[in-house]
Length: 345
Ligand code: GTQ
Image 1 (cartoon, rainbow, N blue to C red):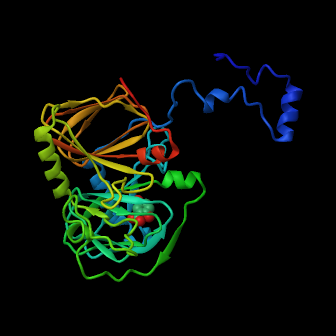
Image 2: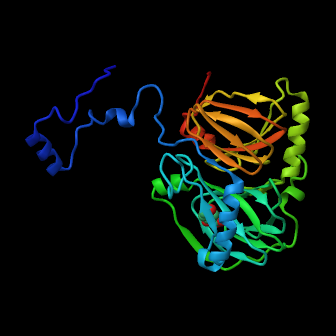
Image 3: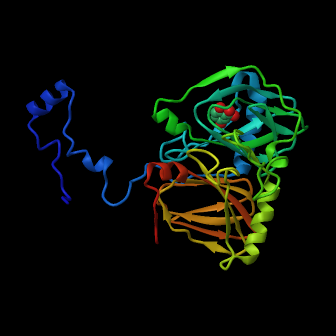
């Protein structure tokens, strides 16, 4: 394994000119850029978006830009490593904070990337996904799988805000990202699947020969269930840290093809130092206060804040009060590509 590879400057100028004319370049001077030794060298830098700072900007967007002119009224959370305007918070995860005002609706469309939303504030908001009306309450996780029609509506009386997470950067990279617009959907007049077919963990509609289940049978994960499950688990957890993955109730697998969601509870004063993971991550604080050191950078977080960690980041959480976080990550994608990895610290 050679540490020092040849440089471009070592090569005669006429040879370099001829290569450029022929549309080729030598690999060796740039080899380490794409194949660094031992571990990736991420461009992504840890980011932190405090909700008290974002909220007034988002409300101002509500005054300045009607939803008709925005289609989706969203402020994009740009990775500091790529600079403001970057349509990604990590290598593979896009994050945006979306506002819908009372009475507004965001038109129906479907697109190749998948989305999930974590509700940040407000009541009365809903998303319709393939005709299923998914009410939005604080902390709920609501899925919009790639290819499914979705529109958003608001029957309440105060602004509704949620955090969008999409695997958009991946689809843009693949030159596979596009959307199709359509009319607002008719809504089936019944509660969503989390309140009907999948009301209790471990129970699913009885299978019959020839019957098929939907690819995404449950698209809303009510926060009240998640919090109750975390609290109970924390009571019996030896180190006191409770973590739960959101799963498809029919397959037991991740809820979306590329993005995973993991809810975590930390007691007041508790610390957590997970192994280094090859997945990149964004953390959304459903409630609580604390601090997290990401690769030596200290992030002081409060309720409804969002922060990010690059691949293989060294992460140490410390909760100042009882806290609930949802980690959005790309482990499902890395699993599928066969390279997800955890390293002891
Ligand atoms: O709500 O469908 O933040 O299509 C970015 C793209 C939200 C959405 C975003 C979208 C949406």
